[in-house]
Image 1 (spheres, rainbow, N blue to C red):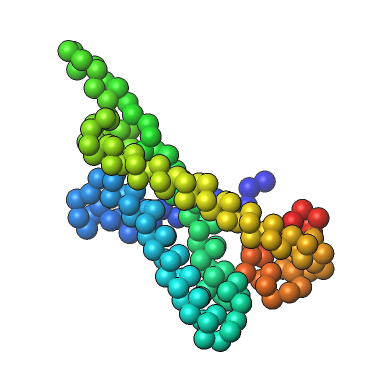
Image 2: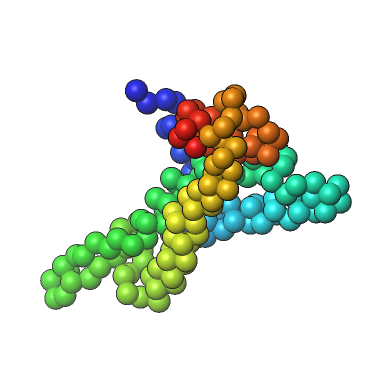
Length: 176
């Protein structure tokens, strides 16, 4: 049985119809889809760091950081799909030779300068999103695994678990 929450995909590019504002191609879509969450994450971390410094609070406390982690969690499938769609090319035979174009945007010829720029951005963003975000979530869980496995409530007993409780609250404590 699939829950409705498991089916949420947040495609920022499609929601805001960025291609209607200005003519754009897949490179713009890739940049908007990957750099916007990174920028928001950077701003959130700066805000959280300033908050922690001023009030001498823990960096991991607060709803702002929780919201940022949830946004990264829900954007991960869509962002990863956009990133990995830049790696596939489709070949066509125009009679004299075979030509190939990027499957996500047939205006970009594979092997051309534009494709190389898109490919380089996609490789770097593949390290950040499909690899980095799950590793970040794993590190946050592993760091607090003893508190998670010894909790008596779904969300955990301590304040510091509140930020990451959305990652484990649906599981039994022994499956931190």
